[in-house]
Length: 238
Image (cartoon, rainbow, N blue to C red; front, side, top):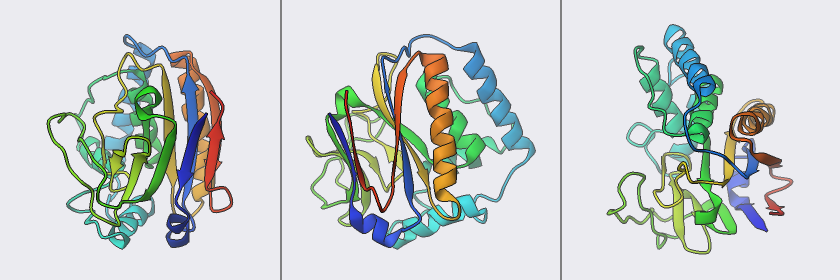
């Protein structure tokens, strides 16, 4: 059983917030995928050809406002999807192909301009929560396994409750190292976050595309769900 929870106070402060969930098991994440690489290259080309103002566009501005509300500076610590879009809109940028699941995440973040992220569930454990930090949790930044940090009290974090390990700081700013998705990953939970106008429609649409791509390119078996003020938690049978 995998229990996924969102602290009710987050929905109190951000009532339009919706989190789409994709549980994917039996993933085959090894090796290249020419199809996914071509899709990602096409998304990069479109982003460069039709750039947006990452500070003013409604899909991004709503997240900057959300970060400010819990005390984080989005200019210093931008949401990951905003930083990604800013990077690829410059043109001539080619993202490294890390693995198939990461390619699916990047592709959907770019084309829908919303946060899409995930974690290796074998490493994360059985209880995952988006909640306010107490300050005692531990964060090891992606790519820096020698670093240990504590989040700021009140910061919105995504945490593996069994270990207290932070999987993502500042809601959707930076992922943790311990639950990163590698070629050996066989089971993941993907998060697709919507905020602002038509957030539920957007989160559901992207969620379902993510599930389809994981099935088609990683041979995964998927289960989807949606967290909202009316349903702040969900339990997956695995």
